[in-house]
Length: 249
Image: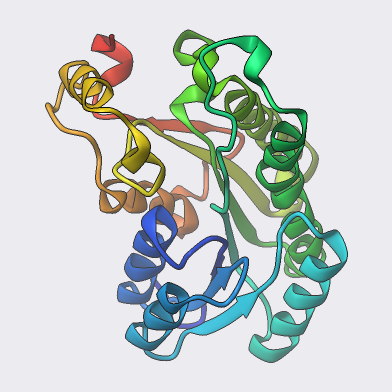
């Protein structure tokens, strides 16, 4: 909510990341967009969000991540808020025998090591200022009651994100840096485009608000945790699922 605050959102060329970046820009933040590679979507978002910055790196690559983030920190003077949004889901299976090791490892590298690499890069400057907020995007699949075999390897990476968030909150909150997680329910994104009609109908029928979320439904919670209004919140995870966890099927 202050033009002096700078926010980096990984995976912000589309979907939830883009929605967060758009809301942050509207609220007056200096926005740093990120993509794993150059893309028309990233360039378009960069142009639409006037005054934003753009960086490209693979979060799974520790060296490239640190180099890119350290460079942008020098350029903008620091990062106040980090949103770890970049994530992938590669193993969609019907039987445990179908799980592909390489895909599972890649999910872990992007979804778990990716946030760790980004945090390693921004944390020193946050600790120096004794202030910062790190929000990592988890998933409803992170919770045991909503895990399914079809997305098993993805789900355990998101469970790890919750553990990571709480561990880092214990370690660094007393030094001024807060760590929280947001766990979206079912959201209309690129991943959801692969769902069958039967899956869409089943999920819709299990949501109290009678609709699958839009990326814009997730962004306000993230930006609340980015703001000073949430200064007493750390080590928490917030399920934003339209009531699916109460009714779900």
